[in-house]
Image (cartoon, rainbow, N blue to C red):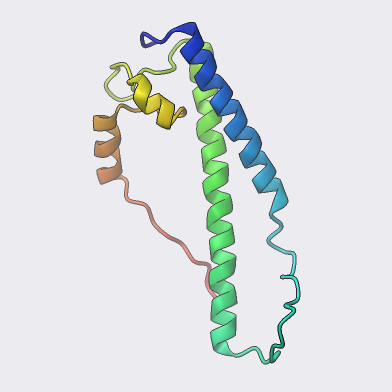
Length: 133
């Protein structure tokens, strides 16, 4: 474990707990099957391909946000497990201490900046939009 004081570790744990609570609330608040509330503005109810495309994009954004939130919840769980094992703050790739400044910004970080940059170069993100149908 890096040279983090008990106060700093507690501060980071509290941040993880707060963020976890926020994410759980957000994930439970989203119901992708719920219809959109009706608009108060006059609207022609013709559903053309453009409107269907817009709805598909909105649905994909909601799904992507939910996937991101669930992914962050997993990262928080891993950080808590690492803290319990005494490994919190150690880079999983090179073993060096992750600086407190990085953990302050990203309390669930498992890599130092150099290793995270290397990881991101070799693990590209892919945006997925569900097919029509």
